[in-house]
Image 1: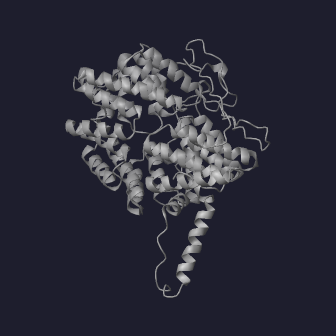
Image 2 (image 1 turned 180 degrees about the vertical axis):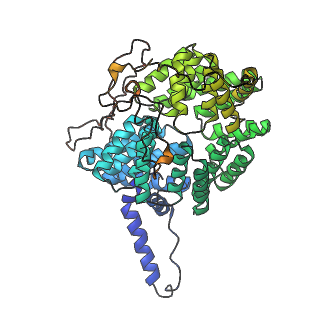
Length: 560
């Protein structure tokens, strides 16, 4: 499980198990016998204590145990927090967003019984995990930072904090949080998280070594499946589909219900021209977890095969899934924007991403999507700074490189366009069944550079286009005049010591700070706990942001 939240509750269950074990050991004739194996609730608690995922069966047992307990002890804030975090974990593992409102009710009830301001760190961490699961990274940061303020040595705080910073594009802060987590905890889960951080910085060999170590050090089938899936992800992103299929298949042998490995294997099977098997895996992944990103990929595979009717069915399903998840508080704007850019209305994609950007969600994924949406909407000049920003953080993404190359080609920057499209095809020549063939066509159309090389090797570079936000919206204290240039990570003995371009971005691209979450009052008169929300920004004259009203928070007395 992601959090130590589960560690501090279900005390009666664990104490009972300990006492029973003691009686058995001391009973006549039992002195040499090993103690009985722990039950499912105890196993789930042990997994939480080490930061590892529990099996679904053990997680379900823990949920049933805490549901019974809070019915008889409604004032136990620890058990409410445990129950809420367990709901988040189950919803994430099954791709079932219906668990998120239940998690929110349980966690808010915990904060009514013990307000966040009084140090209810278990509930704060649970709320941060829930906000990340809903793609509300600004809210997650507020909860996680408040939890860290109360207990800076609690290791469970840092995974949620790292995820929030990554979602906001604050990669320097994420690196520092990773350093702190490494001080507090070790094990395969921490190794795996560190591998992903290294990969995002472009340190591919270090990432691969850490991912391999996480697999080797895994102790349970669920841990092994998570680690093998991560190795599969890295192999796929390196453009090695055979190795990716091997890792994903091993992960599925360890945990057959692992829908993420099914979708990952489908992706890699397409690259190997094993299309029939890929279609089966996509269908199985969607049956286990109806996630819109799976439906979008499935539809694009049908599109690449010329099966437009089947593709349209999947795209319709994707939109329905986004709507359903939205009813449970999940932000689906990024996946919808990706769909609109390539298959619908690129201007609508720009508007959705404008809303994300104003909320502080400035990850490389959002920057790349914004650049591509602007390009598809016929605004290549406006697109270029976003595409450069997405490619400037160290992550080697074939998709990002291709998008940047196409934008440069549209602007007549043929030298950089050749270089970036070549990068895309070297990094992963199979990166998309729809776009990889277009990348090869674009590279062929570009041809080779003229003999003697370009007349100007560097040039002045493009002007910084500032379609959003406007300079007047920028918080004071911005640091660097350019978002594109940062010191090399190799210049520092620590990978996090050198400032990130995101941390030193120009004033026009700096994200607003997210406020800390409001805590629930212990008073009986309190009826709501307000989730944190980023400060509203004034509209820019060039792009109108999409403003979504905040969902009203309501107090509850049960987790059902």
